Length: 377
Figure 1 (cartoon, rainbow, N blue to C red):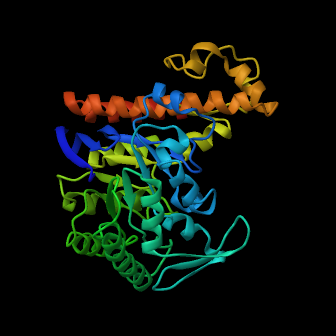
Figure 2 (cartoon, helix red, strand yellow):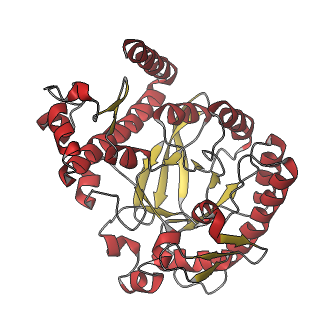
Figure 3 (cartoon, rainbow, N blue to C red):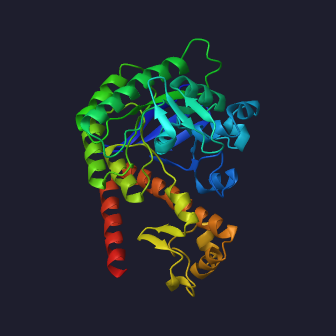
């Protein structure tokens, strides 16, 4: 089933949408918690549901290496394997291969690399990535792309972008080939082009020669400045098809999400809320606090007095710091509950603000709150 998308409300370029998939509806803008190995770290599926998660991301690269697509397919797909009945988006493996610079060789057929698990040689091709994602039975699959390094020359960026386009054509042909057994979802294309606006537009124009139920912007959050990222999005987003969902890959700081939503982005994913939780960094409307700070050793207050998550209703900063210092698993769980609650709440707030025409005021308020917190700190 190809996902379908409709826009229900808008404010400027920002919009509230409904993304319909075989496993349910996603209200956008939406944030996808990352379930790298078929689990969002420290969370049960029921806890994710309770926090308001509508869709999660599964990692094709890691699930391909272990337990392997055959085992997941034997369970009926990733939904049943991990006991998650709602939509799943799977990435293509391209970004993980990008991060294995010392272990990989890129050529036209695909990427040959040494497995970080056991050292064996693996070849990941566009066709192979599609086969794995079809076995996972994700609602949204991603075309295999060549994530452009940063920094890169314009010539290097062009060569990488053009390779991504050739791989996109192969990914599309294989995913939608005649006779592909019971396609469970649809395939999104990925706009590449690095920090060169003209190459981004050329990538988009070429992708639009094929039918994609949605499009992503890849190759950002790879080391560029926030100003560079904003410049790329500001030049690209007005040209993205308005009737299709737009997914900004790997960008996940709250302030970056708000800025991208104002430009018309619909979907986000990032490891930040869960990874930060495990490292003691907790999100509040006023900014991030580090629970490992000695100042919280005897602090009886919750993480955020305005938060109604399970963690803030029941536990103090002093207790969470104690758990962290003792390396207790419960500390990571409670921190993760809070951070994901914050992110899900942020997305609900953004959707409500767009519906009522208050997104601009909300963004200004969040910036003022953070400036005030920084001044106090």
